[in-house]
Image (cartoon, rainbow, N blue to C red; front, top):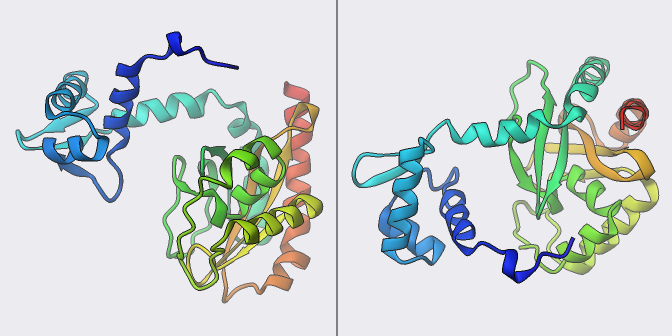
Amino acid sequence: MDIKKTDYVQSLDKGLKVLTAFSADRKSMTLSEVAEITGLTRAAARRFLLTYCYLGYMSTNGKYFELTSKVLDLGYRYMSSLDISELAGPLMKKLSLEVGESCSLATLDGLEVIYIARQQVSRIMTVSLGVGSRLPAHVTSMGRVLWAMNDLHLTNALDNIEYKQYTINSIMSKEHLKRELEKVKLQKWSLVDQELEAGLRSISAPIFSKGNKVKYAINILVQTSRFNNEELVSNVLPHLQATCEEISIALKKSS
């Protein structure tokens, strides 16, 4: 859908910039810091911050501003509107029990994947992920599956990625990533080996909805000490693909 310039609300855009300026690395900020990050004037940033405080989405001690738990309501409203969570939940639990590993379901949001369902095993992991968690799509197996199966998303994404070296295995160029995505598109699954964090491997497969569109993917995340790449493909991938196929069938019937 083409959005007309006359329908664009600049004040809403500015307000969202203030809200999204806060992150795990910037949990608490002063007015000056918010103004600098968003590019707004101090006066404009102050009005937005105080409005969020009035509405309950932020709190302040007079100097520092922080998000409140009410912000989660916005995410939960989106999550609760997704039938996929209800459809996938029982099958993901079954998958997790079959392979003895944690599995997650995610969708694309810009250059990131956002987790919308997760089944976790009781094993200590170096990463803490839950519903609402976000990760850079290009270094995750789910992100690559979702991009590879959606040419429209891929065209827009490749030019805007920040190629950051998270580990020595991280893909660092558009050309390399494009080759990898072409392979993923052909095989319809993706394996990422310690590109986001050393010691962790992930394998993902797509979920197909009506019209064979791919909006969701499921991954299985493992410690490198438990599975090598060959074992992931031979022992884990078949269970993952079977689960994704079951969810795809259920999703097509429900739509």
